[in-house]
Amino acid sequence: MKERILVISHGHPDFSLGGAEIAAYNLFNAYKEHPEVEETWFLARADRGRGPTGQIRKRRDNEYLWEQAIHDWHKFKAVNQDSLTTWFADLIKALKPTIVHMHHYAHMGIEFIRVIKKVDPTIRIFFTLHEYMAICKHNGQMVKTGEGHKLCSSESLDECRMCFPENTAEDFWLRKHFIKQHFDLVEGFISPSEFLRQRYIDWGIDENKIIMIENGQRDIAPLPPRKLQEGGKRNRFAYFGQVNPYKGIDVLLEALRSMTKEERSELTVEIHGANLEAQTGEFQEKVKKLARKFIKEGSLRWVGPYRPEEQLAKMQEIDWVVVPSIWWENSPMVIQEAFTAGRPLIVSNIGGMAEKVKDGIDGLHFSARNPTDLASKMLLAAKSDILWDGCRQNIKKPISYTECTKEHFSFFKNYN
Image (cartoon, rainbow, N blue to C red; front, side, top):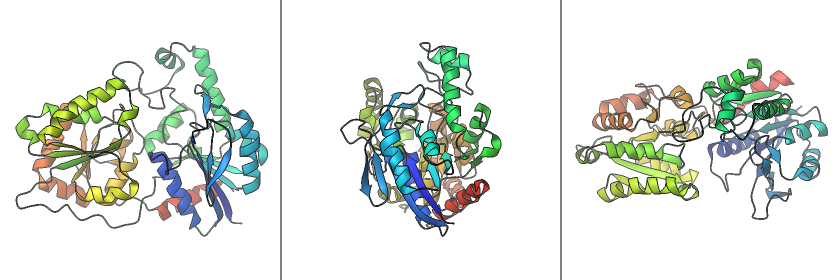
């Protein structure tokens, strides 16, 4: 019997270009081409300017938008509870999926997992985990609250209470067990990195129920190297992604500040990022103040947001991709995108970034949160064409959408 697969995401790439949303949508489209799939659908949470009405409306054929929100982020409880047993339950009854592949519960609440099983207990649920939200109340980042955002290595009732003193240890016990009760209804979990997989095993997911599958990418040839003028160097660096305090944009700008003016004249940095205006005024001012000098000087180009289809053209014009995140990350989509394009990376030496990029092999590591070390690695990279050539040649092509789908189906078959 062929599968009928409903993919659920907390956002639609038409409106939100986060890595999890894009990964979910890419897999939805790849499922369409799989010979063992009869039908596939995509359900995404959306804010249509009317509040959490709970309504589910068609976006286009086989794609739906759900106007839902969360009122209790401690336990991920949905605002519109009626929608769960009406609009959402009715959609499940109408589509009759054999598999629900969820990629998030942010903005939708976690209770829809239980509703799926109530509508039809034979539906198999699989969940791709993209961050640490169940483990960490601090936006799933696993960094401490307060100044400095110190890295957190593991959760405990008392440690979590120290970050959120308004909650008791009992509150965090209830939170964890409420989430686990819903996770117990999930047949299997997928993690795009071994690092995240191990974190969830430590938290309580059975190691036999969670597998590592990397996010698929386009099956294309790497881009040719950027054309250099005579005597030119591989000295053009770029950041791609969201602009927020966890992504380390300020670390990258501080790295530029730590260089001498003469050193900065030997390289160029491009920022291809969005949503600075959505951050706190303090963070915005810090970034703008740092960037202003370097833009005027010519060592920094603030390009701004971009569409996914524009990314390859932008990567054609740069040599190195920089991922300076100050949190663990999972498997940043930009790493696989850079490898697909044939571009080495310079990344923070922690978490999923350190796992995906091999230091001195297909990129470089720098000491996370350390602008001076990042500056030294950028200057090293800018001066050595041999280093760039070697890293580029060692890049292993990421798995394609088709290969990613095959790996998922191999996992699904364990639960037939």
